[in-house]
Length: 332
Ligand SMILES: NC(=O)C1=CN([C@@H]2O[C@H](COP(=O)(O)OP(=O)(O)OC[C@H]3O[C@@H](n4cnc5c(N)ncnc54)[C@H](OP(=O)(O)O)[C@@H]3O)[C@@H](O)[C@H]2O)C=CC1
Ligand SMILES: O=CC(=O)O
Image (cartoon, rainbow, N blue to C red; front, side, top):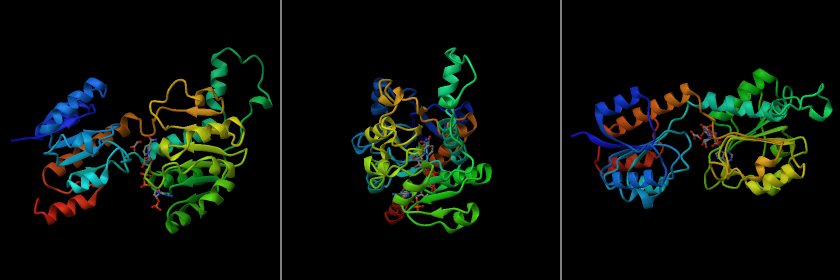
């Protein structure tokens, strides 16, 4: 008998065919209230789940007594209760690496767009307001040669450092749990405390995960350490930042501008004060959103799920404790 998989994200025909070959698939193609009801109805028979952008907590997963594995089509795993999954020995996998370069490209797009006011000035042209040569009131600020500050020197942080160092001649400073000698050597980067980074960087870029430790990491006190020339970029998760404090910092000129791909609540409400500010470039959580990368992520998730359902350790296992737990209990 084939195992039952519930998909809550559409896949390409190629990946769909691959999944169908090995499993019985139920597709929930919309996560509206009706789709969530369909998901709840499908959970009791599910052995595997594959999807993204949905909070899967214990309340929902208690409906899935046969669940063996969840393959998230994302690198971030803040939508999952890892302790709960580990306790139930449900294998959680994610999709690191394949999205690193694309997400760093998005980060750099936001750096350039905010510094050079690309969106604001392009909108001015569209609105028919380009009536004479632009002057200082419309000038931006240079990117090349400025100090790039990276908070969270992991895969994406490193890819951002590569772009800044080699592409734009930017001195790189960074903050992480611990110094990274290999990164320092490669990009001539220097480790800083969080406080020193916030005070010294021209571009302050968040590339860390949302965890209990990072939630609300950047608030009023942290914005107060930045300078009026500082540009703040968030491509990690909205909840790492106190959004009200960010809005205040932008409004009062405590910082120059912000490039934001992620928000406390997504999709961002059209009434958000952020959208009234010209010095904000807001994008719709599109860090990894290219055809190539999204297909690679989905392929990676399908591989992980099929491995897990075949009793093998998925390549990108997140909760290693669930695997050792399985072995201890003789499940595999
Ligand atoms: N906007 C988008 O579309 C996308 C957003 N993302 C987000 O980016 C995040 C990072 O992805 P990725 O680079 O692959 O992950 P990595 O795990 O490779 O890197 C994360 C880094 O953050 C650092 N970190 C974690 N907690 C802290 C902390 N409290 N203080 C300082 N540093 C910390 C870690 O440091 P150390 O190594 O020292 O422990 C680690 O190096 C994802 O979790 C996701 O939330 C990812 C893809 C797309
Ligand atoms: O935000 C995207 C992710 O992959 O995580």
